[in-house]
Image (cartoon, rainbow, N blue to C red; front, side):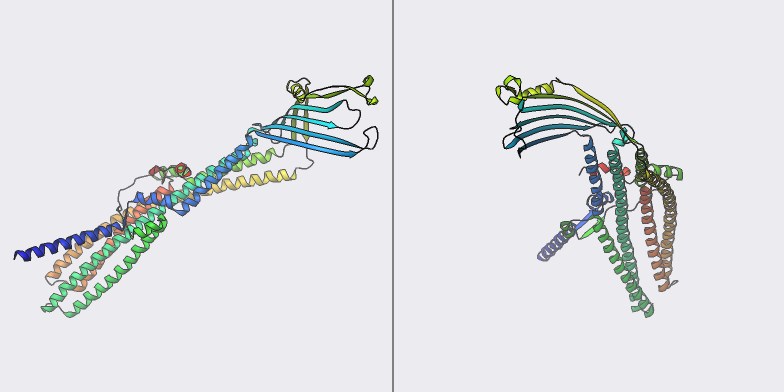
Length: 523
């Protein structure tokens, strides 16, 4: 007896241990997700979001490139040249004239905030020649020069000179708004996929429960037929209903897998996670908390927060600026130029007999280094300046006027597009509020219907026990209860989706979750 008890105890322990291990292995293949975890995974891994994230980065690079216009530029050049030309006259040289020349130049340029340019350059060259009658050979010449040019009409102005930067900033802001809209759409898609999976799983449970009820009734009918209190036909009808509900479960199981695959694709699970997690289980259940908001409040929030409207408002600013630039290009080109330069000269000075170069007899050479020419130039020994105005009036500005007309039409189009989108936003807000209120009433109505169906089935089962009801009626009431439960569940899911949609059309999907677009730009 003791031995038998020991065997039973060991068998029980083994069975229990096996069930625990099997359950742990099964849970190890399950990915349990809350709604927020699902949303975060989706916006982090979704390919559509990843593609959209690149646009602000591209526009940021374009903005950085546009800003380079106001960075100073430095330029260096060096030239060395040797010329050997035949002599046309014995006075120049005997057979040919050889000239050796080298030049070194450095320049710094800067664009001014109002469209002008400033150039500072230093140039120095050395020239040696075999030509006769030279008084400086080799000769060193250096020049320090300051040049300033400023448009006074066409291309004049702080904003005109920064047009590439302004447009690049607008494009960056527009791309960020587009990314925000993409994130909001993705969040809503994640919520939609999540709640659809919840509905599919819960609907499967409802159908499984309905099948159990039908199976229980079938077993009762079989026992009743065996004792002769029920006709065999009732067993056939119950068996038919069981088969029908088993078919419903097969369809519901397929719906669960389809919803699960939809969520997997949206979250873009890695290959490793695809293999590791064979099942996704939503942790959160659909809630039914009432959200109160007036139409006036909703419209005010939407018009202030929707990224699609902000994108069109940015485009409107860009078109207004383009019109300003186009009008500026119709003005005459009046340019102010100013220069200040200081030359310096040095070299080996040749002293001829009787101080006459025509004698060709050099009696002395006074050396002069290159540094002296640079010293004279940098010391402003010889100062020179010039100021000038240049006016350019085209005989026809047909192209400029056409650009103005095109810019004005683009502005009108942007204004109409913004107005149209505002009307669409108002329509979406009204529809979203109306759907939210309708789904709230649907939940309340279906809940009451489900409770009544439960009461009807319970009452009918009591009547069936005493022979006052039929097998067919019980089966129909069971199916009605299953349909009522599915309808209530669908209404609750629709209510949660309508809340998510209202959040999206109000432009609050990111703000309510404390998600910032800048977090995605700095990845």
